[in-house]
Amino acid sequence: MSRNLDEIDLKILAEIQADGRITNVELAKRVGISPPPCLRRVRALEEEGYIHGYRGLLDAQKLGFDVTVFAAVHLSSQAEADLRAFEEFVRAEPLVRECWMLSGEVDFILKCVAPDMATFQDFVTHLTAAPHVRNVRTSLVLHNSKYEAAVPLDVKGRR
Image 1 (cartoon, one colour):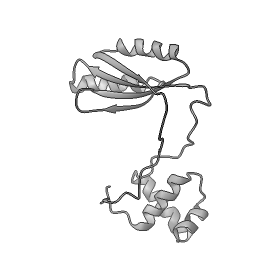
Image 2 (cartoon, one colour):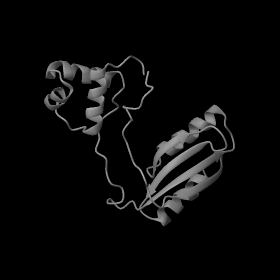
Image 3 (cartoon, one colour):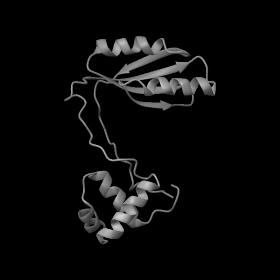
Image 4 (cartoon, one colour):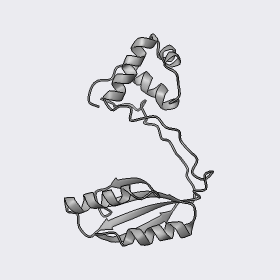
């Protein structure tokens, strides 16, 4: 955290995280302050980067994306330019929903969605042909036991 957040800031973040469509008047009521300072605090939290944006969480399966796969990517080079080039490559790929650079054996882990296995297999062919990709190991998701998009603000030990 770049600054110390007080309890009101944390309450604001928790309420917005639970309901991104909450009105400022309702938010102010829930956190126990009047609407004008509440709005100032929300704007400050946005400007300081604590709030990245507001969006609806969509159900991928209901929208026809029945396949979720994690792809572990190992590159042949870990030179900074090659790592950045791979990151640019995946940013342009719509099936890749998340890309994480890791330490250890695997360089990147990708979370991908696709409407079917044939579409995903076409993507894997494209992925394995990308510059500096040594190998790709995929794991098909059978079942999601937990999905929580929220940050656990109530965890002890925060600074």
